[in-house]
Length: 357
Image 1: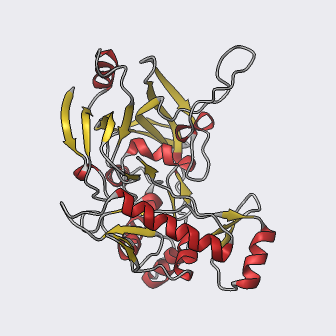
Image 2 (image 1 turned 120 degrees about the vertical axis):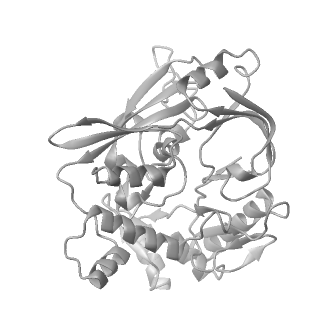
Image 3 (image 1 turned 90 degrees about the horizontal axis):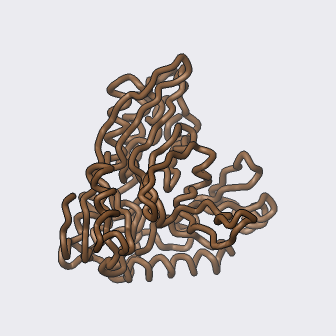
């Protein structure tokens, strides 16, 4: 177990916000995690789990013990007539894991290419893109209970997946049932994911519903693209639309796409006929948050060193660098100003995706 004191966190978050951790532990195995929970000083302290830092906004130094997840490993666990079951360590870079599955002949994750972050964060956020969500390819995960040190596994139903949501984003309920046990299954701050397993279905079928993908397919003149072709197309599309965090600090899509009822949508369309919207399987309508922000005139604007990306209004960016970086306070000031504008014009409350620390 590697323990660092007063550790810089600027290299550990993709927004590039300067902050420090009083104590940072590099967790490279389950044994490292158990050693933390057995340590008389570290065990009782509050914990903060950090993966790739692609979905956090740091508003100051972190006093909690930071568990930097660096557990590696990629392997085929099982192959059946219906699926490949692949396991990845929580510290694997998500995009690298997707590329590994394709290189080894296990397609199914290609639509999720180039999503920033680590494998361990993927179930927490139920990441999704281009018509596929993690829950569509999820088998199970292993985790450690930070309170007891016990290991446990969860299947998809137990993870409580929703749109950019899971049981790992909700605090344990204080309410109790008749047995005296907590009624809520919330695991936020309670559990650390160590390994994730994916079920990649056979036979493989491409998911091509999005306009950008259909346009690429038409341009390439390919009627039946391979998983690798789809992977390459999505990488090109994302690189054209989204800034590389290594060049321009950002946390990807900053706001969730809001959902409204058909009646609410009809009311908005009556006022804003060009609003981008998508019908959902449950009958609700998803609105494009980027379109709402752009319509309010925010694209390319800044507050301090926090800005709205010129090519995609859904992405907030760091216009500073190094020691002169944006602060978490500036990012949140910009985010709140955008929320106010959108609410005043459309009556829609935008919800941030990143965790504010």
